[in-house]
Amino acid sequence: MPTYHLYLEQGPPAKRTGARKTMVHVLDLLGCAPKAKSEEAALALVPSAIEVYARWLSGSGEDIATGPLETVIAERWEGQQDWAGQGYMDGAFQAELAPIDADEVERYVQRFEAMRQAMTAALDALSPDEV
Image (cartoon, rainbow, N blue to C red; front, side):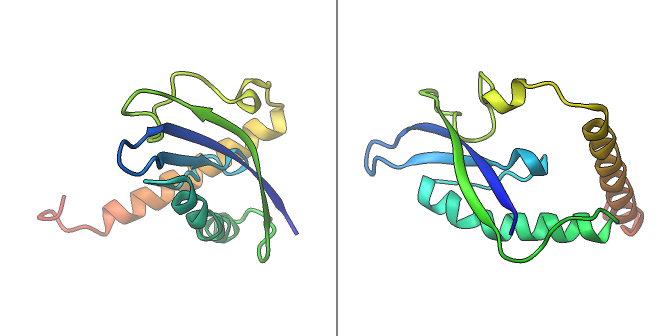
């Protein structure tokens, strides 16, 4: 069962509810980052976001574990600006500061190429009126 580390980016507490806008970054799945108006709501989105992302990776030829998963909150970043918690951190998580090796670079290049191909196919399917 794969374990995914979650990195929470949170905004200031809302005046009425105290809830913090939260974006959950799954750094092992670059680009998998559900967000919601509260930590609880954002965390509830994580399993399906990971499942969809893993299914896409598997469909694009990557060998990735699917099925049941575990999650662990690895780090939390809290900003006080209104835009915090929406993908606009003015810092970085500790895991993002570690250098990556050549195999990881190659994995990201392959994923970006698969994303480019998927986007190109989606755009090619549009009629001129839809573009």
